Length: 532
Image (cartoon, rainbow, N blue to C red; front, side, top):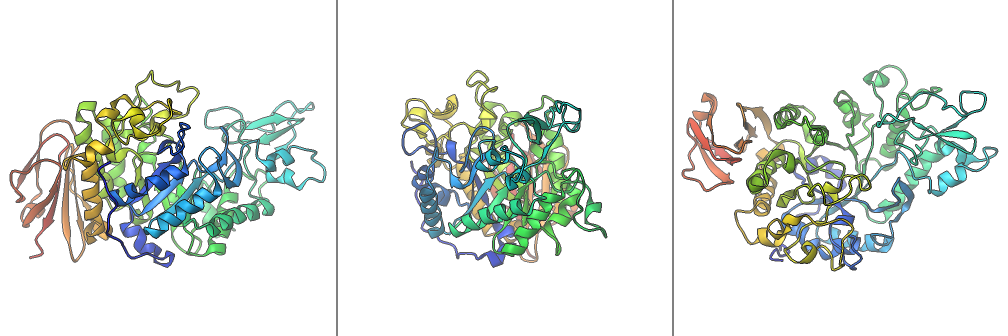
């Protein structure tokens, strides 16, 4: 691998400077099982991250979100305070955290607090006798609504339109996320205390914060936050989702502002963002907003609609507290829906610019920076493995299994394009997607306009264009979102200002801003206006 650890160190930022972190931070989200395998068993692990720590420094990110770390089975968490044996041990995680902290990298753990597996000890105890069993109230158990108890208590459905109730031992347990995933009952004080202890446990291990996945059980109506109490003990406790909000409030009160909590938006109504992120009753420091990519798997996916949502999001007043997500472990690769493989390199740079120059906090999902794409359709049985495209092994080099593992077979097949799409090849080419990511990340870190500047949209047709401006610096970002040449007519209010092109994804003919800009396929240009 050509990349080398950087010798540049940044001042360590304390959690009391959380607001300033949000202005300049760049997150990198890792699916540990598919990042790097250190012990040749075909599965990525924590020691693999320790071995690849120089890569994070080389890329320039300052915060790493770890997924697939907490012990789980196919359905959900089996032990909130234990590292999954498939990826390592608690001691491995502590060593990784110490190594990352020594390089001023922050470490976040990502997991869902909404449900557990039926193999979790809480549920196993809960499923025993309903009499004198305090674990029974860790979940929601009810009798059926018919005399024999064989009919679910009500008609509520999961997202897949199945019953949200599962029958076991004469009773029904609530499982909003699907059979085998019993929902935790946050009405119960003991459950909330248990989760607070989970956070305290990992905080003492050195974790800098948490990402809560599947946070959709927040209140569904802003009226919940009005003059009425924030929480009411409804008969149907999950009808408004207030219990999770109550837990988050207790987390905020217990840990104050020195232990940030990030929420995967997962369908949260944006009208709730002010209550979640601002004011005395806020319950999260940031929301990872993935709604623009929610339709990637749909045949009707439209990149134009995606860009429309993207631009609307950047104009939101709360944008600096929203993490922009172009990919995660639950979606196919955006790049594969946007461009043909032969245009992959230039399209990757285009998506990089949209992600890293916007006011929102960028969250890079592993592989985006080198242009990883979906697996061939016949490469894996998608009925048995959820979203394999986002979890295929990371492509390090052009050796066997893309350098991911020395095992004969990795847990998922490696994409067949790894011979050309990999870190080793791209780190040696100044015009590669990986080097372009590095350039933009470094530029963002040192740019007041990109880290905290105002946003103004000047897009036209298929060209996304906007300014980012502070008193110290003003930039114009111009992005061709198509695989063909386009001309962009610069609005007069901008064309009358002197500007020079600082960054381009293609070789430049001239650096001066003119009234019309000719853009090559997927070309990106960043201009800086003269202060005079």
